[in-house]
Amino acid sequence: MATTEVDRVTPMFWGLFSVGGFLVAFLLPVFIVMNSLAYGLHLVPWEKVEYGGAIAWIRGAPATALLGPLGWLGGWLPKLFLVVVIGGSLFHGLHRLKYVLYDFGLHRAKKVLDPIVYGIAAAGTVAAVFLAFSFP
Image 1: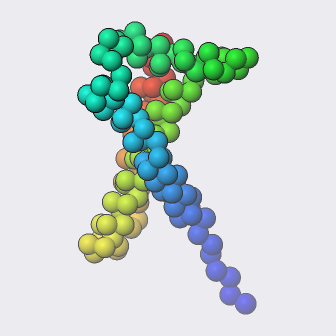
Image 2: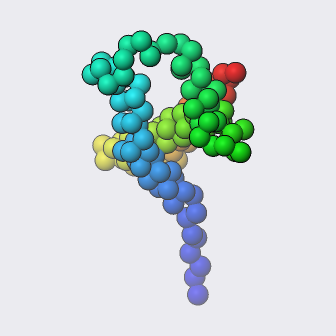
């Protein structure tokens, strides 16, 4: 009886693709509206826009008040949110780009294309972790 090799890596990348797609579809529009459009559409008054509020959000001040006894997690949640949105978007977009390149006839370059595409996504995610957690 012949044994066949089971591919264990490809499903992992499809899982990252689906998580990234979920994040791009549900969380990124909320992030964009709250950080860009809410001020322009006068949903949030201009007097509330200040540097101190952004730093308080990064440090987790609103989340700390809501979490109660788990308030120590407050500083980590906004940073983790940024890393998950950026990393998920990178993996989703670059996985999609990889299959577009396959459709253009580069499917023979799979051994070269896979490390490049996923390496860029991983490097971007590591950069997002570094930048998000470098704030005080």
